[in-house]
Image (cartoon, rainbow, N blue to C red):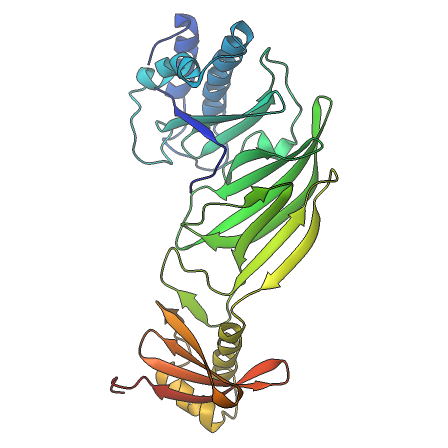
Length: 329
């Protein structure tokens, strides 16, 4: 997942102090396994603390250090354990990311599936972040600055599995040297989604509602899409929009679910069950929607099935199911 405003760097070679590298290597060698298992490994916590110590010390010496300089402080740790790109859950996969917000550096230190998020100034003085950012095996937090001391933490799931990925937004209010949570949001998005959009103090995110019967088989397909926005110009997030999209597809999803669970199916439901028997998730690889005369909408699924819905009041009701012309059924 690519997120704007993030400065990323990979840890790799050269020690500021041999003793520090030795402490890191000693901690790494005493790990319980090569990846996160049964909670947080105390040895890997120690190793990450050593990495953090090197960065903070470097920033005390040079608060305006460039990305290249920061990377040089971190290189020895990767070299010490023979780290190389590979399995992102393996502790040998060592990464860090940092971004500057109002003079503070928000940084992630990551070894495999364990992440520590901290915030500090160029002299190493810290902001007290909520405990959930201390040691995390579920989320990687990416910060974005907002007006009036607000910081948006976009949290991507670790690891991302399947086509549907949990997405979490956390708003922090920085007051002095303490940051507190003033808002949260959780949703589901796609593997290819690039994250919330932040513009002029407004945060907008695109998520998916949970289908009843349909299932997307593409990492980029938004199914039952919902647009949600917040105004963040007054020191706290205020939700100003939560708009469901793809209304006809939502009606079809409900109609398929109802057919599967009907004790006395109608003729239309019997026809639907010939195409989509109960107990089989309705895989959706592609679909098109077309408005027809007399208030009808046709949804063509996977180039094989046509579903006809009739507008009734403010909703849509399934009135017909056929094979797409040219497809034998």
